Image (tube, rainbow, N blue to C red; front, top):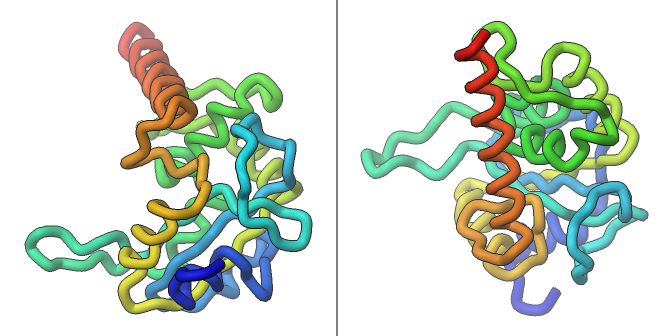
Length: 192
């Protein structure tokens, strides 16, 4: 972990990882978080992933997101952001959308528009939450400029579930699969 900043190392090699059901213990502060998964449970390319306590780091995120060009910053903080990934729905979490696309066949998931939002439906989201609770862990670190740490991690670490700003074949395939699932859900809703 040479030449990584201290907060990046704290995500790459966390001292403590948490169960997804325990995200309410996260501080109501700005920060960076990492989602770790049991190796072999997701169809991702082989790579030298950061590994902690039997889990591979496959995704990082931040709260709040990078301020806009107007300098305004969202009110999102770790404690308010993490539940979107662990127990809400795909309309609130690109991670849940990505996981659902990768696990659609295994978990019998079908993306649709439910209560006006694009997600896996009540039962599908429950199955996805169960899968996350069994196969994922999360780590976080407080940081006043989390977007700087996120940029560092996205540039230098193997994070296959972070697909924005990536151009490798797996990221492109995953983007295409997500787009196809969204189009199919919207078309089915429009033709209903």
